[in-house]
Length: 260
Image 1 (cartoon, rainbow, N blue to C red):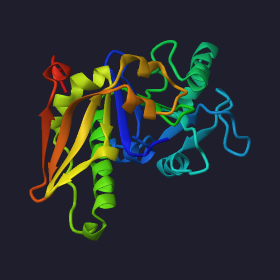
Image 2 (image 1 turned 90 degrees about the horizontal axis):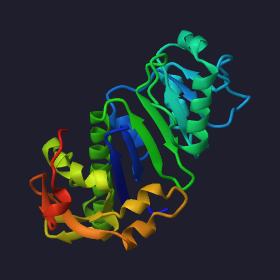
Image 3 (image 1 turned 30 degrees about the horizontal axis):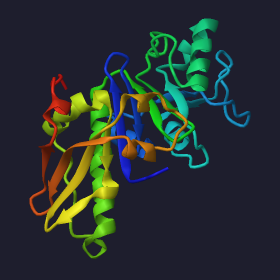
């Protein structure tokens, strides 16, 4: 899997995001608070604590949750958070079946936000390394995306300018600029850091519109998204002033501005 692209597809109706290149560390750094309790939707590990009501592994407390999320031996994170362990007693067989389906098929049968669990997230890592994440509050995702794009630019720039590695700190993308990207994210957008361009203190990153069909592909290597996508704009960053700009090449791709 390429580590120099970020792909984002946003479904505002189901509060679903499908992404490549936005990992669990971006997620942890971008959300306001780490979940206090989670159920793993992956196959059960008999060596970890198991909830007797749902049959899922559970992790209680922020420190245990953080250790679980950052465990490098777990390649395919699949989990749902919950508010209180006592609430697990009231889960019905139907609700447990729905969560099993989430972890197996990587999609929802009904709303993935359960009143009994009071969950804010469902996090699913797909077989090809993409992540499907449901956010009860979508602005949480925008902050995760901003952090991921900012970090990707910093890494790509340092690879190009190793002798300036410690000289520059990359400022975060402003929320107002991220808002301009939203219409494109609903169709599917690729940020191609592999083709980052440097000209003096100016850095530009190509933005491509991805084909709608890519949204359905869970098993393919994401390089195909570069081959089948069209250039519609560029992100521009000035290293000397720390300012971001969006260069729009195809205005129609950014039409129908939506509420942040």
